[in-house]
Length: 455
Ligand SMILES: C[S@@+](CC[C@H](N)C(=O)[O-])C[C@H]1O[C@@H](n2cnc3c(N)ncnc32)[C@H](O)[C@@H]1O
Image (cartoon, rainbow, N blue to C red; front, side, top):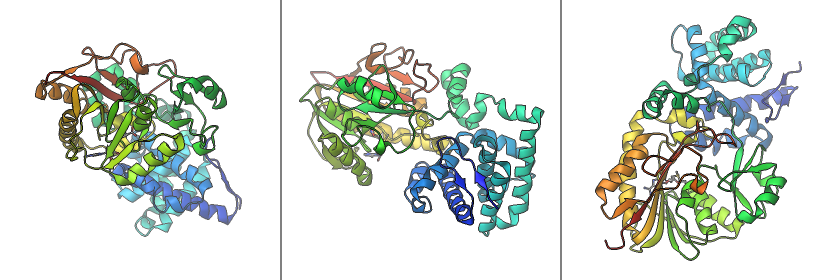
């Protein structure tokens, strides 16, 4: 029998033959592992990309596995609500995740219904713990397919309130922090697949590279392309003329306004998008990160760009070094909830208990960063989080603890920051719900401080 599995538009389609069936099974097993790891813990999705079964897949099947897991994560809030009335009691996690993958294929990936159901039932048969549930999985997914074919029920599937896309506790936090309309605008971005943003080695190349990469030039100088696939194949990658970096992530390093020859410290630097910006600006950069393994990417990128930086694998909180720097950037570890457009797993992996621990770490790292700023020097603190405890509250508490520092307000529209991202005290609160001419950006908080000359 010939089965054609139609994947989403940017995804490889598998077709026919038992070979392909088993390849399809391997892809689904990998998608299941990505999904489980992505929901379980922060960073789990990325870890799963680096191990079997995902990294044993032939390259052509990786795109499908990743797209299936990502689509499921982008739609998880809705999928769980659609599945709930069909389940008499909560099934084991493995079975729930198989149902979620099946639902994502049925509803959002144009997989023919019979293939979406049969491949998930086959995947259930392959695992001892899910085997007893294969009948239930079959029945639930067929029920979902019938709903989709029914005009009234199909309407309920497609008319989704944006809040449904986010975990309830996170949506409630966003509503409390930003108000109902903004929380809705943020959540509405969750199902959207973003384009790829690029930062340039030489800003003067913007027009030429925008043409070559079918990209538009964004206000801060980043390029945005709707291209998909392997970036290493794109024009001018090998020549080191650009690197991948979300347009919002490129803003904090610009706020430091590094001048050629300045000594610059980049704390929590890996994988190094901001280090590259600081080096391109002409800074003599020291990049510190505790994860030596993540520094490999940074070293590769520096080499590809023909740039250099001092690379230090150390805890930024107790790095034994007494140099003072003209400018210090701290891109602190955080819940990363602002990055859900590219990493939808962060929505489900973030736990309320993480916030307090991360806020304590952020304050410790900020105190350490402050000690390394020369009198008269600048400090930028940023996080890719939407949570005020990691952004606005850190800024205020830092100013209370450090009388030698004052806020150096950012000007409206500076550094490519979108309109309405400036806070009343001159920090930046960027969130994916902000309307910009080019579409959405990741969420970021950034504050710039200056150390007094005299203390
Ligand atoms: C938000 S990411 C940094 C992204 C990076 N600045 C960039 O632009 O590509 C946070 C980084 O903090 C690092 N990190 C976490 N705790 C740390 C610590 N105590 N000392 C140094 N680095 C730490 C993590 O390894 C991770 O690479």
